[in-house]
Image: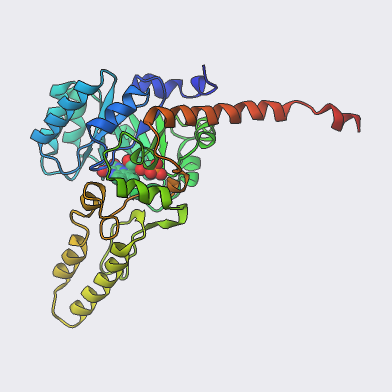
Length: 345
Ligand SMILES: Cc1cc2nc3c(=O)[nH]c(=O)nc-3n(C[C@H](O)[C@H](O)[C@H](O)COP(=O)(O)O)c2cc1C
């Protein structure tokens, strides 16, 4: 029994889990081992489909099912050219929850998820979009602050939570970005969140297949080392991604400067220059996560990386988070007791 039980009852009922802790989908990291470990520990694992083909996703779901009988979800990127085929794979497997990330989903994608019998989870980057997503059929929302690892929006979770949680009550809202301890989980649940989503802490777990170099970089890093990608010129937009500063992030700035110089010298047209900047990071997350090149690769990490202090099994991480939340709840009750010595004075 935890103090969180009544607070996250709605989130648990929605996910079908013991705790309303979602494992944020992380490309290359959130595969069968981590996803099943999170679900087996009472959380909700989510497979990151990323750029997988329908055949690969089919195999990943089957392999995950072999490792857990608990519920798990699948995160699909809306820009994937085979999105509808990927949804069909999820439906065929009876996946209960499909998370659509990376932009507003099309009506066809929403229909395919819902007619297939799965619950639809969407990312809401602002209040107006949250309302629109609910109108178009989202069964739950994730609000992800700019503290998060990976692709980020401009607004912190501290602000998004205040804007969205008091207003959106129609569907459960899960919060993500920068959560590393149980005290924060308690606070967001008390603000009205149905549950939480963590990425960085699980990426460094014992069950994560991330390369030992990747986990070592997480252990070493402080919050301030997890920085958003830098854009040099408004004419050449850079999608903001939060990750650890390294030789690759420094080289990216130089690459932009050189590309802009070549554009101004007439050596590249605007489209070629933009593509050259966009292609810089192609394959870079895999290089860091799988090959362990944490100098040139993309070491995506949230500001919560400063709270990664050991490589722990997922079950231990979840138990620790709940214990911290319970201790905070209990401490508060003590503080509220009138102090007799103060009253006597
Ligand atoms: C290495 C890494 C890769 C990620 N890849 C994805 C992804 O493919 N799709 C997605 O929706 N979110 C992705 N995210 C975001 C996570 O799902 C999660 O929302 C985020 O990590 C939460 O913030 P936190 O890291 O501070 O816990 C990624 C995050 C990290 C750290």
